[in-house]
Length: 325
Image (tube, rainbow, N blue to C red; front, side, top):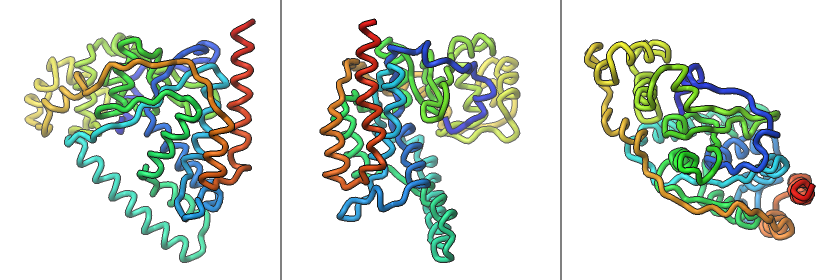
C-alpha cells in the first residue's frame, strides 16, 4: 500500500527461492511492470525502445528482463491487471498525476541545461501505463504463455483473493495492500536482486494480537491510498489506540476526529471487488514468436532483449530436466 508504515508492523522474512519452487504467484501486474518500466527508461537509451513510428515501448524490455527471475526458480507468475479505479482512490490518482506533471517540467528543464543524468532520472518518474503499453504488455505475456487475469477493480485485491481461495500459492506485490485485502502470504522484492521476502498475514495478526479488521483500522489511522491518516498517529500508536478503544470508531470518538468515507474504505478492504478464476499453471513460452514481436514488429534493439529471451528458453529446458530427476 502507499502507507509504508505497515512495514514496521508486518511479519516479513527473507525466504529462499528453493522453498518456493513449483509455486504459482498472483502478481500485481501494474506494480511489477511499473518498476521495470521506470528502471528501463532510467538506464536505457530511448532509441533502444522507440518504434519506427515514435512510440515508446520500454515495457517490452522490462518484461523480457523481469520474467526470467520467475522461470529460473520454477515459479509460475499469473499477471493480474487493475480494473476500474474506485472513486475512493480519485485523490490518490490525481496526486500521482500532479507529481508526474511536475517531474516532466523538471525533466524538460534538465534537458535544456544539458544534464542528461538528471533528465533520465526524472524521465523515469514521468512514466505511465499508456494504452500501447497496456496492449503490448498483454500480447507479449500471451506469446510467452504467462496467465493473465483482469481484475474487476484493484489488482492487489484480486491477487489477495486468489491467494486466500487457494487458486494460487502466494500474492506478489511490492506494496502492502495485499496484507489488508487478506492475502495469507505475499512475496515481495520480486523485482530486486537476491531472494524475495515473504509477508505472512497470520503471523502479523498474532504478533500484534489483532484480527484483520483491527489491522485495517490501524492502517486507516496511519493513512492508506484511500484516506489520509490522523495527524501524529504512526503505526505503533495506532495499534495501541485500537486495542485501547476497541476499533476505528472508538479511536475517532476518543480523539474527536473524522476520516471521510471511513465506512466505505473499511468495507473495501474487508470485502473488495474480486472474482473467482481458473488458472492454467502450465507455461510453454513461444520464445521465437515473442522475440519476433518485440524486435521485428516493435523495433526494440535486439541486444537489449536477447539475453532475457535466452534465459527464458534455458529455464524451460532446465525446469523440464529438474522435474524428471
